[in-house]
Every structure is written in C-alpha cells, then in structure tokens.
Image 1 (cartoon, rainbow, N blue to C red):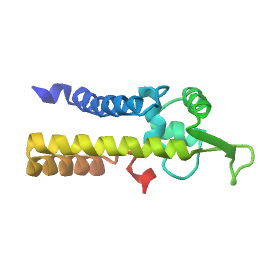
Image 2: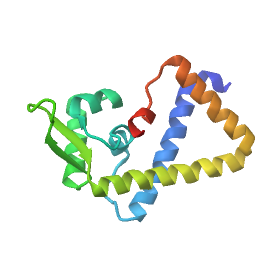
Image 3: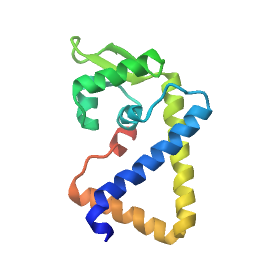
Length: 149
C-alpha cells in the first residue's frame, strides 16, 4: 500500500528531520530560522555560489531564493560578495554563524539517523540507506551531497 504514496512518505520523512533540527536550532537561540531556510542550508555547501545556481539546486525561483537569502543575510547567516568570475553577479556564502547552523543541522540529522538505525536495526537501516543511495544514483537525481564535499 505504501508504494502509492512513497513520494509523500519520503517527503514526510525529510520534513521530520528538518522539524527536529529546527526545534534544536530554536533551543540553541536561532529563533528566526524557519523550515524554508533549509533549502539554502541544504544546497549552499562551504564555498560560494551564485543566487541563480542556488535557486536551481533547490528547485526554486530566483525571486523566492532571493527573499530567503535576504532573510538569512539580515540574521547574519550568509553574506553576499561580488562574484570573482562575473563582477555583475553576487556570490553567496555562509558566515561563521551560518557554518555553525549548518554543523548543528548535520549533528541533529546524525542523531536522528542513529535513533532510526536503533529502531530498525542497524543492518536493516544500512540496507535501507544503501538502496536509497543506489536509487538516487541510477535515477541520476541531484542531491545536496556533492555540494558538501
């Protein structure tokens, strides 16, 4: 029965990760952050990126991404600079506080994965993750992983 709603189930699983991370971030004093900000933290990586590229990665419009970036810039999590490759474009990168938030999210996700592995059993969880990785690979789906190497 789950196969009919698998995409929504996977989306719900991702949102559960983000909700837990957001609760942890709020508890740590990052009260202005919202779930919509995860698109930036997921796809920005540790280098710099243009707004248009970040919007493409997150599958959002440039206008929507621009609004999110303005909010994060006002909170001090990202900064904009002139792109070294194209002086007309703006390069976006995480600030020191932005990197702290990204690390906080990663730690929370790791804790959740550990809990889930204990619930499913470590062997089943490893199989589940390996199969998802294989599906992503053969389907040629772009994920945030390459941007964080």
